[in-house]
View 1 (cartoon, rainbow, N blue to C red):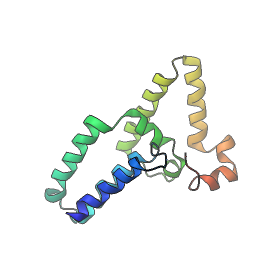
View 2: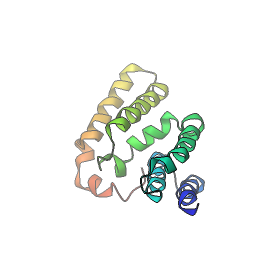
View 3: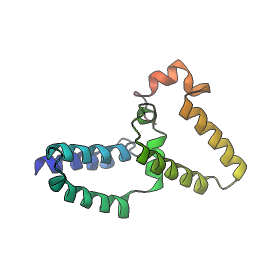
View 4: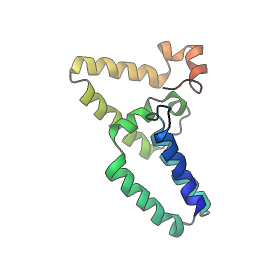
Length: 140
């Protein structure tokens, strides 16, 4: 039971802590699920029902596009290329849904999109040595 609860308690501590959590929640939930799977030695019959409970709660109550956007824009995760193909679509969908809500003007949306492209390719300011060094140090 401890091996199941401990990863979820870490997520709760993250959300309840003093540190800004938005850019970390998405990854923390993913890591918690992976730790639960490892605790059950990849036996789907054992971890599957637990994942289903987590996914139902996450998808119906907790997961919002802003979490996906925060994850995408967190340099600590973005530049590690950890996004799988299934996550890439979901994460980018969340990012652009947030963009459309927060920036109603289409010209401004295009400018933000251009800057996101610089961020993704680590060009311009995002490609400078200091920006690269700070990826794992600074909070997003």
